Image (cartoon, rainbow, N blue to C red; front, side, top):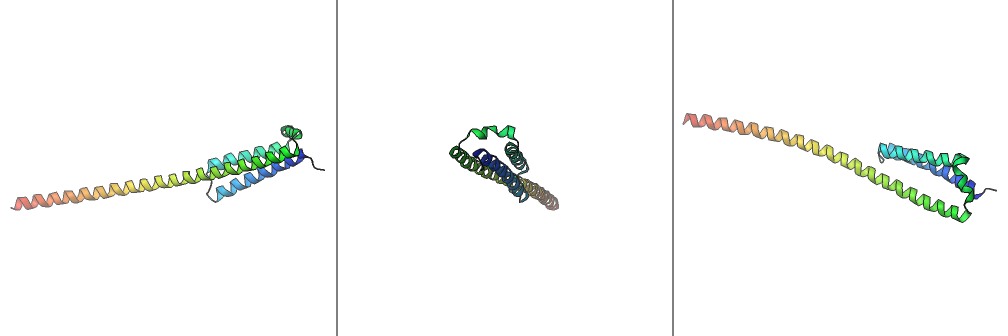
Amino acid sequence: MVGTADIIKYGMIAAGVFVMVSSFWHHSCRKLTVNLAVVWEIFGAILIATGVFPVLSTWAHHISRGTGMALFIVGAVCLWGGFQFSLLLSRLAMKNHELAMQVSLLLQENERIMRQLEEKADGMRENEEKDSVRD
C-alpha cells in the first residue's frame, strides 16, 4: 500500500518534471525569457531533489492524507499562478524590448529627415542668395 508520504514524494517529482518540461517548452516557443526559464528549471530541480532524496522529504511522513491533498491542491494552484505571472512578465519584457527597438528606429528616421530638411533649407538659402545677387 502506498502511504501519504509516498504520494507526496511522487507528486513533487511529477510536479518538478512538469515544471522543467513546461518552462523549457515555453522558452523554446519564445513565451518565457531566459532568466525566468532558468529560475523555473532550478525550481523544478529542487522539487525533484526533494521528492527523490529521503533526507529532504522526512516531513512528508508527519502529514495526514487530507492535509497532504490540501497541500497538493494549494501548491498546484500557487505553482500555476506563479508560472502564469512569469509568462505575463516575459510577455511584457519582450514587448518593452520591441518598443525600444521601434523607438530607436523612429529616432534614426527622424534624424535622417531632419538632415534632409536642413540640406533643402541650405539649398533654398543659396538659391535666394543667387537670386538677390542677380537683382
